Image 1 (tube, helix red, strand yellow):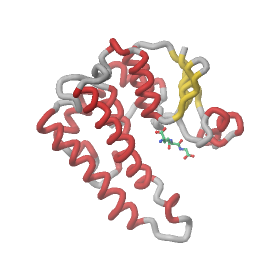
Image 2 (cartoon, rainbow, N blue to C red):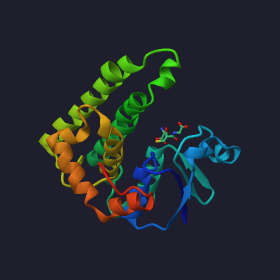
Image 3 (spheres, rainbow, N blue to C red):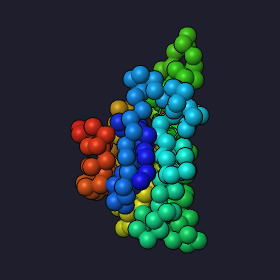
Image 4 (cartoon, rainbow, N blue to C red):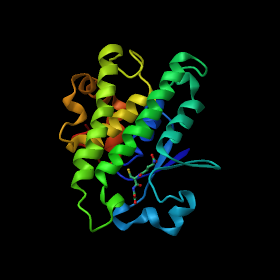
Length: 213
Ligand SMILES: N[C@@H](CCC(=O)N[C@@H](CS)C(=O)NCC(=O)O)C(=O)O
């Protein structure tokens, strides 16, 4: 039985959708951010960054949402949420996973929490509007162009864990001036993926019932 340490709609959402889609047995453990539980001594023992999520898989304790997603799909290679290792399709899967987690996710973190960069006494407005939001928007445009040419999903007609990752990030980005959903092909992907029972169940179990993305 897997244990996923989570807080509603945090970076646990994509691993959670994968657990649901694969039909794996798991237990959710709330890390109560309203009480700063992510910085408690107990939690820091399993995630020294004080960040959510963490997956416990028997002796294996794993942080970083993307690593958790990759571990889950690797453990269940026949379920089709990632192409076979060594194929060009697998390489593209790595490309999109890395782009989402390394580029888009990081930019959205700066957009959401600019004060963490500036400190208290600097106006964070410029960082958000001219910096992070603009760069995140450019990354979303790259995804949109790719989907227009090669969609409807990131790997064409084949659902992969990378699509779940995009759904998670799109929810975070809903308040952008030009949010992900404003792009036609991304909106289509979001509609397709959020219609899946696994995605609905994952968000419902986290207590998220509205505006999935
Ligand atoms: N790169 C990490 C980022 C995780 C992350 O920043 N999680 C946020 C919630 S989405 C968090 O734990 N924030 C709590 C904090 O910063 O104190 C991952 O993907 O797992």
